[in-house]
Length: 429
Image 1: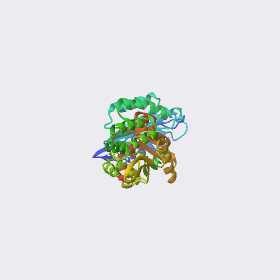
Image 2 (image 1 turned 90 degrees about the vertical axis):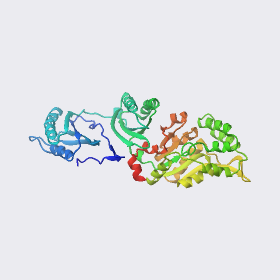
Image 3 (image 1 turned 135 degrees about the vertical axis):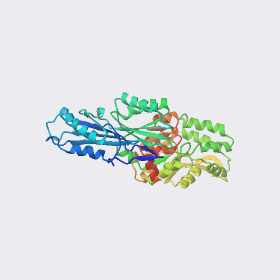
């Protein structure tokens, strides 16, 4: 073997993990050079190159390795190595000339192409900004979307350091590691690309915080499940059109949620309590919901729901999914019928954020290590309070204000936004 990381297989196709990145030395005036080896992969290539680099050449000490990156793309090896002189006094020109002869020998021995060039001195992320992950998701991801994202990134003065595929099912997703731009600027320029191409594009800062998430809160209606429960109840009360109009206005942020909720619940007065069971049994989970929950639970996440809906629906749902917590409103019932009123504190926009904080505190998890997913304006405080707020098939006002947005029909695409590959998901199932 050539010492590469094992290729990751997806349905007999090979993907890249990790992908090659632009090899760049840390900011310094120290002479350095880049060797790039490419060609059909075969055993021993990496060993041959580094054996040659280790051997003194005409009395000149061996080089020092500053950076290495290797990947195999469908049987084609790309290996990059950044080196510096092994002794003081040797300049970049002399180093490149010495390595050129070494490269010729390695190429002859291995049948690979080996190129040598001077490494730019002092290359670093512009303005010292920390790198970010840019995730492209689509069904499929078309070349125009990648081209548009790359142009936007370059236009922001940033550089793409690495690209790897995260998944090929149920959505195709690629993760770009980008340096040299601030997060807000990246999100702004890439939002235009997402709108033009219909591709979801998320931006997250590189660092431990991304993989340190430990709790996820999901909205229920039109997020964890398809449709709106209150609309289904209203249909059984013969008030469907009226309630649907109020629901739409509330989710778009045009009405105060608590006020709209009272008005909608009032329209349910007189419904037999058995209707709640009928609606609950007819619920359809959003595709990928079980995969998302099971995967995160096996990875140690606390998972739960915070809903502007009703505990008579959400509590049994949470129990059936094995969730850790749930919060929602409670419909008042008297003599076996809904009264049109509510019992207890209303879980409105602010209430959802308070519930997130309460559950995070219950499990001793800082808010920056939480994830919230929702679609309506009443989710905004919760989405912004979480370490990562994801607008899922959301209203425009929500997409614009959340940390990132997903418009795919699969809830488990959240896993790719969190940086998990398809193989990691399968391993956790």
